[in-house]
Image 1 (cartoon, rainbow, N blue to C red):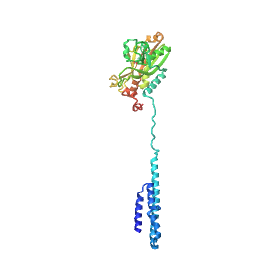
Image 2 (cartoon, rainbow, N blue to C red):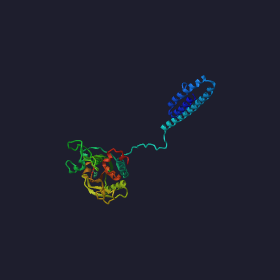
Image 3 (cartoon, helix red, strand yellow):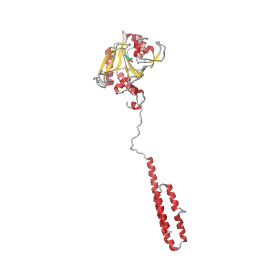
Image 4 (cartoon, helix red, strand yellow):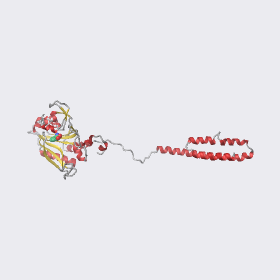
Length: 344
Ligand code: PHE
């Protein structure tokens, strides 16, 4: 009997040690301390023993029982502490971690440059106005000195909406210049406007061409406007956008609706005039076309060219953005690629 008690004690201690959960501990308790356990049975059977044996065995059995009860209580406590630790671990919130950054929306780079261009001209007294993207042949070409079959139509590969050729045929405007005519038809001088907007050309796309792009048109008409006003206004614009000490240049160029016509270039942003691949070795980058409004364009809009004169200009916004930020491909702008757009 004594031996049996000893074996029981060793087994009970071992099993208790390996109990890892509340359920296992409960199984252990039923087996070793429950009403039907071997130990309880042994204690109960003591009554039938002779007094001498009962005394020693009884004391021993009680000692074992008490020892196991204490160990049981200890184990119970340590298991519940473990489970508290575990649940704390699961719900842990490290308040020192940096938060997840919220993704902010932002203005498209072309919109940002639009705003900059409009700001520079607003300071010089120009009003900002927009016009239709679907135009008539008349406004896009005819009123601008480009009648049917004029070779200058080749300068503008056109996306037509109507196929029949007439002055009313609809097309996607190839430049913002039709707004010169619309403005002069509606308002009489003095007038000073810029027109930001989308333009379209029927063109194969590559790194520097897209079939949709943006322009800003400018128009100033008054009784004493000269080529000098044109040059100073545009030079001031270039310095406002590209920096005060950027070199600027004016040269003659041809556009049917201006005379004289010109182009304005800035010193190459990459090589500063030394000559590189970007400026094709010339040291200069052309950024806009311009000129004095052709007299019969004025008279076609009901403005007397013997009293009034004006200047006009048009620039590509993608090109200016590309040069300002060193973008290598015009197609990035409309690819919808956040890795590109988020840099601005
Ligand atoms: N509309 C011309 C173009 O798209 C630019 C221009 C505008 C030239 C006004 C002269 C005057 O190329």
